Image 1: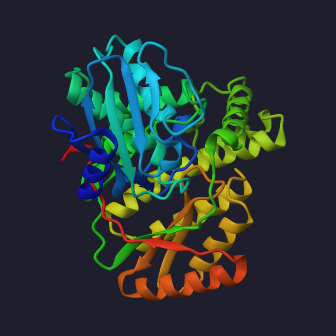
Image 2 (image 1 turned 180 degrees about the vertical axis):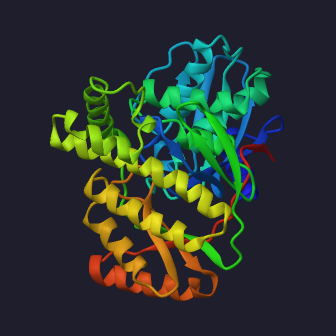
Length: 385
């Protein structure tokens, strides 16, 4: 991949004598979806699929972006002093550059940047957050800005919220910026406190399956789900002193749920509360290497995302149902924001090959779609190559 990136960079921008090479991972969330903007816990890990990049400074104020994944877009150019959203892939790095400037870290000149990702686009493995974190990492390295990886995560989230109009939480950017090889990140999104939990299950493997059902968050019901959760929180705050839905236990929700006047909003809140509790339990189970409990919680998570949060859809439910029925599978669920994308399944190590063969066959028979499988490793955060 590195050789390809350099070859493409030299073809587009010239010899690249001053250009440096970078990588930022994608992420998979083991459990805890749609809890991050609700003040709960998430449990993701960075993976060794992600975004490669090369970049160097220019002698003017011009920004020139090129993506190997979107060659039809050509070189996307922008004036450093007049950044605006144009609804193409380059909005992600542009949003980060603008956010840097708003925080007093203005670029002294323009730059050339080429990106090449091996994350399937629209898969729920956070290709956009990978680009955002990578951009911030490049800016820090090229321009010498004093900014931590945790701050890079916050900048990425802010830019996606405010420049790209997607009201995402902090999970994706945080998991990518703060990734640690061999560990999942147990993150309290309300306090931004976190714990690295070793993922050491010699008898099991996490298998990522791409449904090839593409999604576009900016055009999805993601923002609607967040608004519904906020309405539920506002109703609950009339009867109990909480700051976020993540402050509630399941027992508290059962007592006070009738305060949420709208039935749909009540179901959204039920998912946020119980998913947060499942995530806490999954962290403890993983520490004990209790794969049966982790798998059961994953299955319960998917059911809640399907029935209470309604972010799965028939095709994803079909893929998960097929996966859960395979021998040697402890649990399977959709991962990420939903509306398509990928699943993550906890599978006995000796059953992985059969799992991929049978799930691929039955998924195509039932949906007409191809399933792609990814054998990934849990990786570190962004690096200079």
